[in-house]
Image (tube, rainbow, N blue to C red; front, side):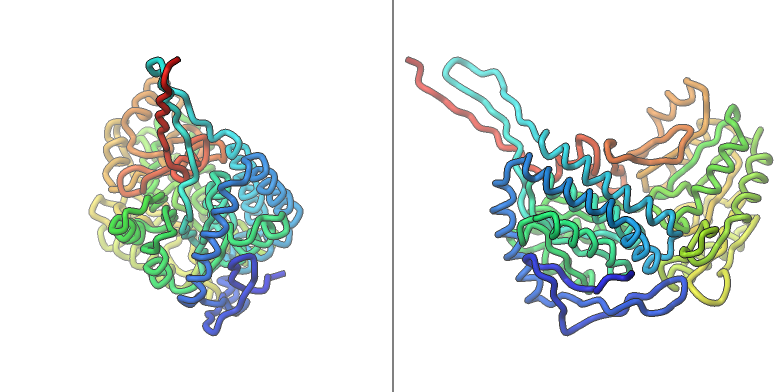
Length: 476
């Protein structure tokens, strides 16, 4: 059920002379060979996107919405096929892959509705004058999506661009290309004009350094690490290109003394291990009030240790492998650094098994502030549980990193909630739930976690420009 791997440029599927392997992280077996785009391929994509923008930006919003909705319907109909592809290349459990396909379709359905709501406004003026504000598509978008969500992350970029009337060149992740390929196929079958959506793969730095400076590109949309996001932002700024950056996080969870301890701990352990912790909004730094610390930690550790790890194709599996072998080494280094600095390794902390890129569900207790993992996002199945004595201390700890994407809290006290809403430095704060976003809500970070928003009524803002029109008419 794994698709044939191709580039999609100007409405056509193509191979290239260079390729790279795509590996199943659960078995370490090769799934296929992924073509890498040459500069000629990228030039073709730029030319196609220019032509596509000329057509698509002049297409009525209702017609754009209809095309996006047809693609979303096809995605739902093909859910099982797409989900199998995602599990093969990413490793996540099949039931989670199915949910990701549905989430991708939901992003498209929301953006289709927003396509018809890109309203301008009229500003009152003196007699004989009219001020009108128009929102117009920004142009060709160069977008870059990560490997951790092969379907929903490309869907966010494509949905926003197409709903706004832009054309897009998407460089999806080479580790997990199938989700984006399936999206391109659904839009091809839904009747999207050639060149509006183009899909390329290859060496990330080579592609970004070639595309971003090119004249047709007006927006750079990226989801990934803060380090790479800064590099792309600097490159874009040199050429006066707008950016939409959804970057790394290191999400705090503040657990107050009045909460349902068993529920908060169990939910936290389950959610932390989703997608093997490879989620930019993954709950990671748990700051737990001293009155409930022991009960919370015991419950959390027990549930985390019971996580069923294995091949995502097996029904009972809750957590699949990491994306690649490099992630195992990175997590092992963080655990060893924490251990050397006095952290208690309550469970896990090492590679799991001998085949596939699996890592044990891991819980670190009372990690000191100078442990690397307190400042560096692990992007894996590692949770840190630290004791705090007050809400003010918890907020201070939560804000002590340069990231501010998602944050969570468990409490029923209105005064605590009011304090955290004002003081916790994140773009997305969730109370008594570990869900960070929905298609209808804006999603993005503050500080080093990026700029701009995806989703919600704000989701098309970066894909559009504002034009003010002043019409002066002679009075009779």
